[in-house]
Length: 226
Image (tube, rainbow, N blue to C red; front, side, top):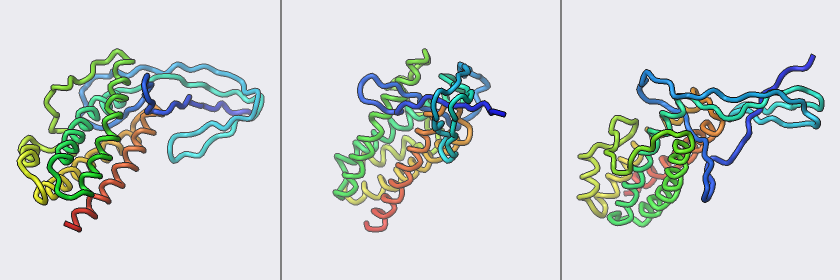
């Protein structure tokens, strides 16, 4: 007896211009709404041997010639939408902090780390915004106040501390606050992996986890060396 399989088209979550980014999925308070859209499904029969990749951490499935399988295209959940909405201001604050470091840090290694953070999260913001726009959902305005209730977000007072500091004092504050900020992103990513329904959303969450976990380790090393 043959078994129906499911496969999902895979597209790089971050492209150059003309981004097609289906990122998403994450935590946050329950809004009581559901803006999700059901995926479209169709059934096909394989005419060749196909490897169907699973979610991150899952093994791939093998579809043999003549075996039916289900194709799932599109679709996303309220969890996905909420994650994208929240990660945009989260990334924006990280970029703002990193740009302060380029001006005010005393340690060259801190400046190099800040450059990497800005260079990585800046393009991700564009992709996140594209995800919302392509689904007819509003993008959080750039001049909006940061939502300081999000995991890891620093307060206005802490941001003012960074603006007023320089040199070694700035380095310590920046590394401490950015580590806190990154940890919040890891919490959001963990929720996305656990509860997100969009394949590329989960892949993005895994990327956030890997990248920012490594940066937290580096920031702790730099803090120890101050």
